[in-house]
Image (cartoon, rainbow, N blue to C red; front, side, top):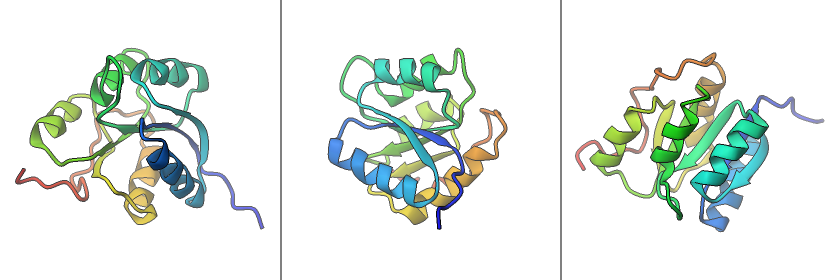
Length: 143
């Protein structure tokens, strides 16, 4: 019995192993992964080309732009919801990310349980880029 697909997700992650794990978790939750890229410039192009419903964005990317800078560029043409994934819970990145309007900010590693509610919320944001969840699960607010 095939599960009904919920939405299209673009994964931006420069660690190939983590990218595969994230893809598996997202698909397990019933979403279509329409693209996976490793650099900010690729993400900007794919976001425009694929028109995803949600972007799952790593904060630390190799290349000229990090994940937050990448979303600043994408925001010029799109209000697509974004879920940030961070390898650390540092306050500076969290504050920078807030300026781009995110659905959630999660600290890696993530589980399907960590992603389920943010993905659902992102899909139902209806293009509003300034609705941030107050939970920001797994983010250490004391960092």
